[in-house]
Image (cartoon, rainbow, N blue to C red; front, side, top):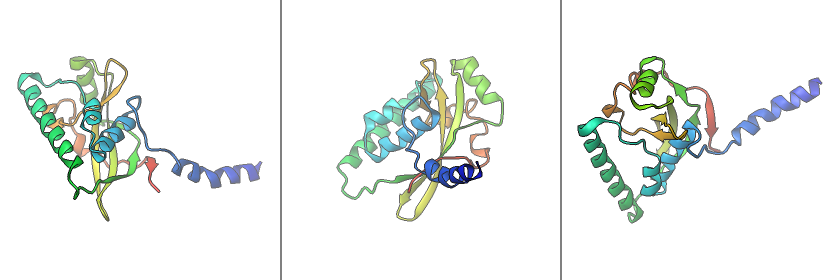
Length: 175
């Protein structure tokens, strides 16, 4: 029995390290990674598919549409830019709920979102330069997770987002 436990303990890190990059809108980590991968691949249609529906009111929705148009133009430009060096995902942490109760309650009460979380993702932006991105994600009525790229337009839904402690529970790590 001890031998079996020892073997399990030795191989568990290898098994966990071999985890694939999260993908898909069935998990908060999957949609966060999909949004980044769409950027990396210069795929504006895939990026748009990860985004939350307009929820910001008349002026906020106008700003959101302008933001999306600019991001699509930038993404499409990278397709033909030979100097573009795509970043790579180094690590994705397990999604976390906000420490404050307000964001989750507001998301449900005002917009019928049944989940409101954030995902920290470490990206290598250029050779040797590492940056942590915090993705705000929401679970909509269709049971899919969506990336909310403009937390400044939804401060009630993202209250305390940048004040949260660093994530520690790694879900994916590149080799």
